[in-house]
Length: 206
Image (tube, rainbow, N blue to C red):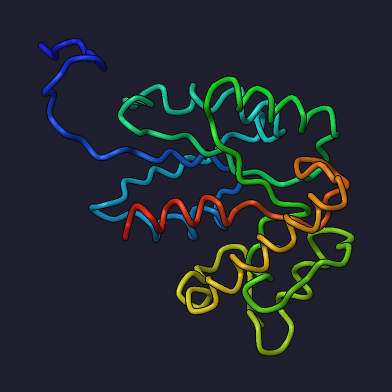
C-alpha cells in the first residue's frame, strides 16, 4: 500500500519538480513546450477541453486537470496557465490573475495570440496587432516562418533566435509598465509573458 505523502517529513526521497503547463492550444503550444522535457526538467503539457478555454475557467480548473497526478508545490512543482487574450474581457483576465495569485499558479499570457511570441524571434513588434491573422501574416513573411501552420513543429527553427525574443519581450513589458498599462488586459496589445516560462524551463535544464 502506498504510504501517505508527508511534505514535512525529513529525509524523504529526492524528486525533481514537475512543471505542469495547462494550455488552450491542442497543437501549437504542445509542439513547442514538449521540447523542454528532459531528465532534468519534468514537463507535463496538458491541453484543456473547449469548455474551459476562457482565461478565468482555465485557471480555476487547472488543478482539476492534473488531479490524476501528484502535485506538491512544497517540492517545487509548478502550474503554468498558458492562454491568449482571445475574447476575454478585462474583468475575466483580472479574475484569472487574482485566482492564480491566490493558488500560487503562474500565467504565460499573450495578446493577441501565442504566435506573437514566435514573431518576436524575428522582429521587434511593438505596434498594435489587429488579431491573430495579422500576427500569422507577419510571421509568414519572407525570411521568417514562411510555411508556418499551427500543426507544424517549429521549435528548432526558432531556437537560435530565442535570446533575442526574450529580450524583445522584456523590453515590451518594460514599455507597458512605464505607460501604466496592465499587462493582463486587452489594452496591452501586443504583449507576451511566455518568455518567463521559457526562462524558467531553461534554468531547469541548465
